[in-house]
Amino acid sequence: MIDQLLCILPGHARTRIAGAVAADGALRSQSLQPSRVIDNAQAGAVESAISAALQGLDAARSAIVYCPVGQSAAARITPLLTRPGLPRLIQLGTTSGPSTEVIPQATAAKGVGVDRLLVALAAHRYSRQACLVVDAGAVINIDYIDAYGVLQGGVQAPGVSAMLRAYAEATGTGAIDASTVGKGGPDAALAQSPAAGVLLGCTTAARGFVRLQLERVAEQVGVYPRLVATGDDAVLLFEHDDVVENIVPDLGMLGMLESFRILTGLATQEERLAPSPIDAENEGEEQDD
Image (cartoon, rainbow, N blue to C red; front, side, top):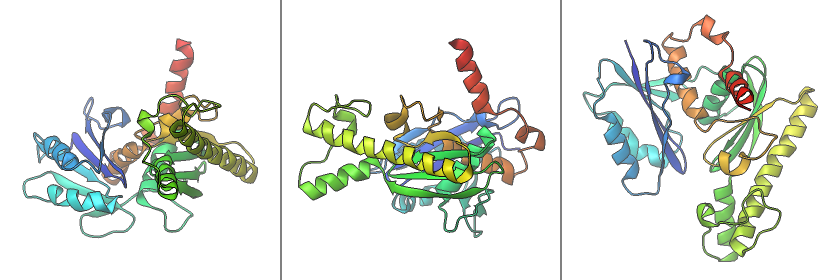
């Protein structure tokens, strides 16, 4: 019986690592611990974090769920996970192959990345209705998942960090770190420094992109879908945005956990029909108010 998971999701800019421990003998969404987010550019940081996370895992009762999205980081991580004596490695992908299993998510689009499939799976599993999911990271993915859980398609654009880098390269100015800009954040109307002005312009472009796509999807499908945000920049962009109903930073990790549950037969029909955890969270917030 597997009662502990280690989920590892190397992205293009950052790697997420999270553990999941069975509660009452079952691995559910509540079992997932908050992820640790590590910058891939920090020399040795990702390898050290993974080595530390592997220590103490019982090979007979644990499994590693791995989804190598960012190939550069994956080239450093994969050798750490294929050493003898480690727990079973489940590498999630879009096609079958050695040590690889297919993401159990329907899609009507072609060439969809595994990261988008994971987010779509978790979004539908935990909202149980049609939704528009914004994954705001190095790239901003906006995908529409219908009421049946089918990813119907989406759009992509450069993320805030990519826009900031492009601005620096085009103008010959120094790199701008969004975390150190200070005043003139995404909720301001006017910036008080050149760096804050660039950040405000980029975040405004990203938020406008999301709002326009919401309007377009609503016009096409005839209803405004629930808007859920995830990704490294979700809080920066949408913390005070009333258009976004939920911010779930670890939605991709939840997709990895849910993929494991489905692939191993742990996800029962009764659980899939149970009330939405997102709705339960919203009800709790309303009662607190």
